[in-house]
Image (tube, rainbow, N blue to C red):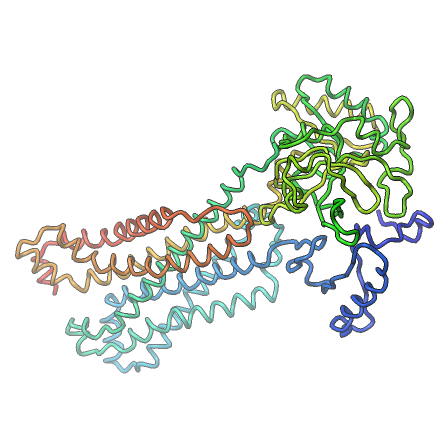
Length: 619
């Protein structure tokens, strides 16, 4: 539904102090975006003269809202930081794959050495051989791209489910995407194929055809550097995945200060409020319904903003707090713990809006709901504060009880209770001061159930709902779903990082596998002589593995501080976060060394078990 504010006529709320709507400005000149904010600030200072509160407006370009906005009410559709992380990880995977290609191509160089020697003998030039090998790299990359285009539509549903997005298959075959893919193929072909092509094209035909070409194989440092670089990336991704999973586990297990399990939330309108007592009595007749409450916002997310002032504070000074209108059943239904004072009562609710209740205690909607700054209603109120609000006012929980408090300059009352701080926003944010106050204005009905006979309980709720308000559809969801939605981006990132880190490790092991194969074949004669002289197989394995283990250990020394810095920066985005345990680094190091040893040992054992007579004869 679209409705116009101008149609509200006299019901329009002409005040700056209820900022419940987002305002959009269409500028005559886009260049005014830079010069307009100071003018708005000056205008608002003039508008707010004589007011006890100040109001200002922050401008943000419309096209930035979706992924860049930092302002409340303009929540971004996703986190740009996480997009950058995924782009960076994808590029790292591409680099690891290219390094793997270099190492595997170099490992195959011995098989192609005589081919290169013969080609040179019959007239092939180094430049022609170079571009021939570049062409082979391009053919390999192009074939990989074609296969990926064929596989991608089959994998896209899984990716959509993993990322919680709906990416269309048609996007894979659009002109911009295909053009970008071609550019990537060309770049990877040049980067990954240049070094193998350079090495293979520079073989000396005389030494190659004689079979003693290994001394012409330059670039040992480069190939080993590539191994180190691959394992740096792999270790970095593994540690990042571990830490992300640790934080997600911390979020799931964090004591929030309220109990969100087995609590249903149902949207509620004013018509339901008029006979809420009847609805409560009907629903509580079911033994599986433990309690229920109406409120404006659930404890998972409270975003309403109010101003409070104690009697000791100057009239121009106010404390900005989050606030939630509730009924007396809110605290027992949500499991929030009182640390001082008492809970609200039904009498407190009636006293807060006496003009809205008949003599028999039946609620009738009237002018008292949401008394604003211009209202003449000054009902007697009792408030409940959280520990953060009490500290901000300079009290202890016990001292706060009975203190006089002003809410939004129009509602005077007393503090009746103090609740333990609970996380009513994401763990990204520090717990803010909070005020809970009685008001028949809730738009949510929270129902705590036992969790047993769940289908029957929900069917019972639906039948009673349809009987009471048949014109309103029965809708519900669990508070757990609201809570999980706060961290959907982190959950998606964690799942994707699991896959990426696994791919990086596999690619790094392939590169190590190729280089260890090359190294073992280069030392066949040496190993044969050692075996003739009585060296055991274990010593051969240690001989061939030691160098690669040193490379892996070097990669650990470089990757550990990088991973610590990156994940510490990521965790800083959470006001409440897990620590980075030392055992994560130790476990990652042990895991990577074990994988590297297993990879290298395959070639070491195979080479060490060769018949030394045949090895020496071949050499």
